Amino acid sequence: MNHIVCLAYVPDTETKIKIGADGKSIDESDVKWIVSPYDEYALEEAIKTKETKGGTVTVVTFGPAKADVGLRECLARGANEAVRIAADGLAQVDSLGVAKLLAAAIKPMPFDVLWLGNKGVGTDAQTLVPMLAEFLDLPHVNLVTKLEWKDGAVTCWREIEGAKEVVETPLPALIAAQKGLNEPRYASLKGIMAAKKKTIAVKTPADLGVDVAAVSGDKAAVRWTKLELPPARQAVKLIPADDPAKAAEELLRLLRDEAKVL
Amino acid sequence: MSNILVFVEQREGKVRKAALESLTLGRALAARTGGTVAAVVAGSGISGLAGELAAYGAAKVFVADAPELALYSCEGYTAALDAAASAFSPSIVLVPGSMMGKDVAPRFAARRGVGVLSDVMTLEVENGRLVGTRPVYSGKARATVSADPAAALQIATPRPNVFPASKADAPAAGEAVPLALAGLKIRAKVTKIEAAETGEIDVAEADKIVSGGRGIKGPENWPMLKALCHELGAALGASRAAVDAGWISHSHQVGQTGKVVSPSLYIACGISGAIQHMAGMGSSKVIVAINKDPEAPMFKVATYGIVGDMFQIVPAMTEAAKKMKA
Ligand SMILES: Cc1cc2nc3c(=O)[nH]c(=O)nc-3n(C[C@H](O)[C@H](O)[C@H](O)COP(=O)(O)OP(=O)(O)OC[C@H]3O[C@@H](n4cnc5c(N)ncnc54)[C@H](O)[C@@H]3O)c2cc1C
Image 1 (cartoon, each protein chain N blue to C red):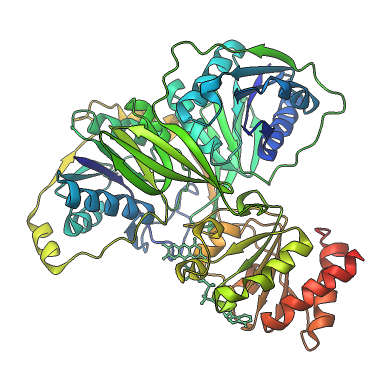
Image 2: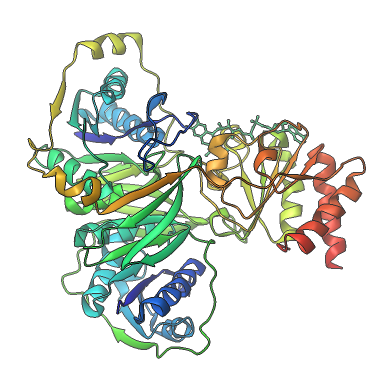
């Protein structure tokens, strides 16, 4: 079984966010970058499945040159090949544009399972998975926390509000990982050494036949017109806790009479 | 004039609250654009829902009623939305930002070659284009997002629990229009639904949440929090530390790698307030922090706080809530 894993290289969630000079994007100067955590679950599952069932794992990203660091991490963990669609110097591309680029890169590659994380940490739009599935005419299952392989098919457990849906899909299919699916491994030293020697195939949007100007910047289907720090919250009202019973009664009174949420 | 189509999520024949919120929002937008609101609903044996949707302002209700739509499938429900959009030609489509809605809206958008304003907490029409805002980067920034004004169709998924749901002053016509989905192709199919523990409210849908973190010390102490949940009608949430310790299932986890929630009341007990936790609950209307450490970051976002031992404060709150009801 052959696997393709799409991943995003994103700002570490711990990173301090500063608004960029354009007022629409972040200032990337001091940002620490990581492979999006959900994509790590996707990669782990692909590698695990390859180890038991054979086949290869190819990782694909749309990102600038610095994303090669993330791709090498994936190679070190057990991916066989890496492809980067070069985003260097491009204006902001939204999910629809990214889905078009990824679809164009993936279309000629043979695979049984296409893996993604259920969302890219940071922008958190959660729109890429269904869009990519649509462009590749694939069935997809989102938010998967468990799966069982069948002959030419897979059963997935998908997390929804208050329940799990059990979804059956034939292969090839797109499966999007949710936390709980597995515990991603660390790269071994041997893996890290081997990854250093591998070449990352870099393709430009033009190589893929995608007119990136038509899907980016002020041509993107969804534009970020402003980015700002969130409005400051009011200072906390502390309730003295010397007498827990009194404190609890006062808190509930405030929730009912002042905040009006009870 | 721009018409607005709202995708209505139903499960087991019941319309989900998030769908009524989207209908109410659709009605407010239509009042400004001078358009009409229609609803589309997919399922099996659901034609009776039109009346309820009319009460929320749907002039037309497109109904895709077929046995193979009894359980959710993205391909089936997207086909229903697509057919309704072809019949109604809306310029705006709203899909509730639930797990189902966030699965359907982007697939439909890609089919139409347009984008999705995802998970928005405000939504307006400005000069003919949809403009919304939403938290990004774990809630450390807020983005204003807007749709391509040249797009024939603009789509948004409003975040659940943020927009109010209210009936229209007078019910709309609610004319039921059956949809026939020719050549329906469903590959990924739900075969079964495994419900969580019965009677539990899911954090993603709850209006009030009581959450426990590492401070709860062990799974044997959940009954203490559950008693407070019971008195307040709240759902039980948890931090990742509590989930990863194996004290509770991931379906309760709030945060970056858990659920994103926007309840009117969020009570954090023994949760420090790491940025990844705040990414999931920072947009709650009222936040209460109960923590023995006065330096805990949760106090920085909280509306009310008690510095103290949760093992004393939480039972006292349960008692106080009982008294208040009496
Ligand atoms: C990529 C990534 C994703 C993540 N996703 C999430 C996520 O989705 N959700 C999430 O929650 N975390 C997430 N985390 C983890 C997050 O960084 C924190 O580690 C986690 O939220 C800490 O949980 P906690 O507050 O329960 O525990 P701690 O940080 O250990 O805090 C425990 C708190 O309990 C208080 N306490 C202890 N005993 C008592 C008592 N008796 N009475 C009152 N207070 C008491 C302590 O003072 C302390 O403030 C993620 C981390 C990463 C790196």
